[in-house]
Length: 146
Image 1 (cartoon, rainbow, N blue to C red):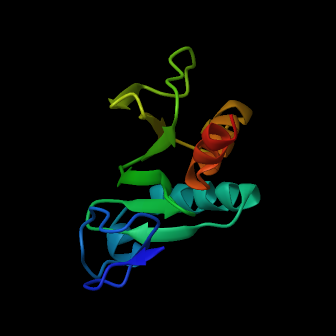
Image 2 (image 1 turned 45 degrees about the vertical axis):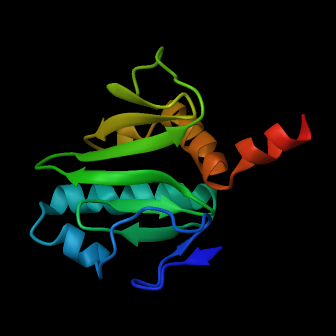
């Protein structure tokens, strides 16, 4: 692990790009609708059932990380939260995601909007588990062992 000398945040890769700053989850949630803030906490509680992680709040989002960032809550809307999951392949044939960004065919950022707790479906949890494994760098371990 490498720790940024400016902000003190730990990263798996040395000199990893990030936005240095002193941000909090409370800053991110400040003045947001109560229903959306509750959904934010519900989403985090569901992820905690999968495994432990740290929160890394920055100016525009709150990332979830283990060895690397694998998920982010990007927006607290008037009646939803916007999230993304980092996966190692695109999963285009699902209704969970409205957009997938391709990061050099290495990672695929899957975007979703959650309007209520029921949107955290069994299918989404399946992908959440996959993203959690990306956070633990399971894709690197598998690649080395093949």
